[in-house]
Length: 321
Ligand SMILES: Nc1ncnc2c1ncn2[C@@H]1O[C@H](COP(=O)(O)OP(=O)(O)OP(=O)(O)O)[C@@H](O)[C@H]1O
Image 1 (cartoon, rainbow, N blue to C red):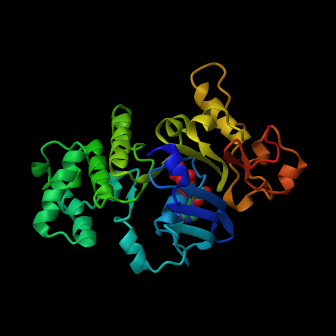
Image 2 (cartoon, rainbow, N blue to C red):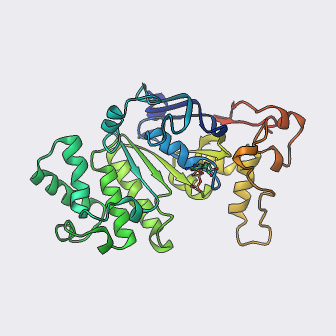
Image 3 (tube, protein in one colour):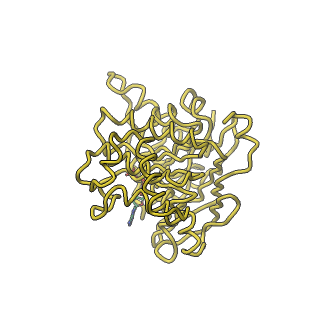
């Protein structure tokens, strides 16, 4: 979709001031994001930043009373926090698809892959057994599974990791979802096929004109495959904006740190970010990055900076250059 069209379209997903607590700990702290139809967003950050937690909350797999929720998650204007499970079931696997990082764990070992691809087609689209089977063959072809008719009857363990991931992509996209959540979709795969699978997901997302959120560790990969990037640190979004600009000129000190890790990797100038992410039960009062930030002043330790619009992006820092 053209960038100008995307910018004016009504949001598909709107996350505002959204927090998620596990006990007293704010795993997500006042997160804000907007995703428009046809847009791809990379959610980038270190392990433990809260990326998967946000994806799981959007798809309704982390709900009250298991966790505490506040703020708002809207899908096509419909509030998702507090949505009845029966309603969520109509969205999940239908209008919102999900790809997990580990297909072996996500696929049911007791059912053939054909049955697992056909299930959402029958449940959400009401296809007959025969039609669902034929559509499953088409979907398997579209994700590059050779001899799909033969493989319909295979159990997950009979397929390679890459083929299992292709099956999961077929399931996630079976009902042409408007939104795809892909949580580290290639990290459990061999390096040699990671790029192929990422390319396949992007190609299918574009073909369906769907929106997608990719949960990733890698800033450079996120910038390469997504229209926009949101950088998360310790449960907060510190910077969000168009990928090329965020990568070329990061404004938040944490994004800069991530970039220097990527760009300098393998060279003698590698500059790892000093220190560690604080534990959930000991988060700093103000900016959560302050203890590791080279620019931190008293105000950073005292008060959390609100996101500010700068050069077409949102940056949460007291000292943006
Ligand atoms: N079931 C759980 N119980 C308690 N704490 C949890 C649970 N799952 C996640 N957490 C904590 O929530 C925080 C966010 O975790 P999350 O998995 O969302 O991060 P992430 O950015 O997706 O990391 P990764 O890239 O490693 O998946 C972490 O501090 C993690 O330890």
